[in-house]
Length: 136
Image (cartoon, rainbow, N blue to C red; front, side):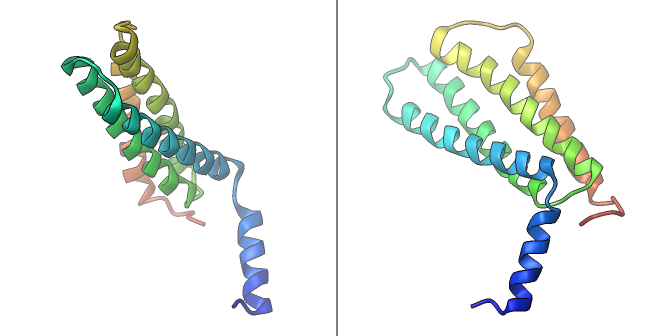
């Protein structure tokens, strides 16, 4: 069990969590949930080969970036928050573009590629956060 000092340290650490850290944590958890649910759909839906491949690709990208958002939630600095923002927006755009094709054969133009570009930018920001001096 925790000692009183340890409980106090945990409470202080939780209060220091930034709003963005909580946002990344929440969004990462919801993305993970959605990825698992859509993986179940992919496993049981009767889709043609191409839409099924698109769905599986979207699920994989969504799952990886759910985990990346959880990593962003554990740090609090500008670069990590920039990575979190890029991952959050990039995941939404990429997955909307991919899932629209998979479920409705609806092509939304450059939505998925723009989302993918944001996801790559998020990884660059996460890399750069390793050199950020003010990690909490």
